[in-house]
Image (cartoon, rainbow, N blue to C red; front, top):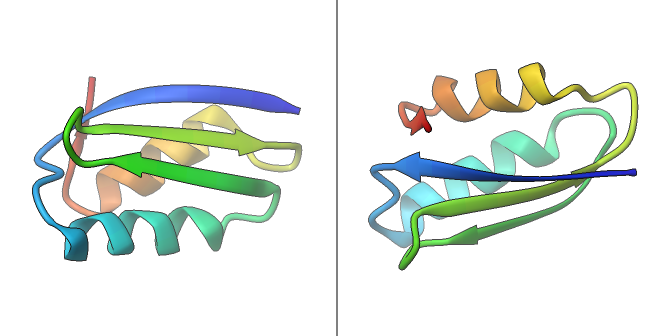
Length: 67
């Protein structure tokens, strides 16, 4: 099991939070997703076959930049 923490620019409201969370939960292997709007962070717990590159790409595909 892997745990990754990302700084994500532009997470400003609950609609964006829900969009990112739902997109990440659709990835096979993602177990848990936490989005903190105040800190603009996303934390993901996942197993294979999910990869860190796939998770970052998914977040970026929702229109946000991962730092």
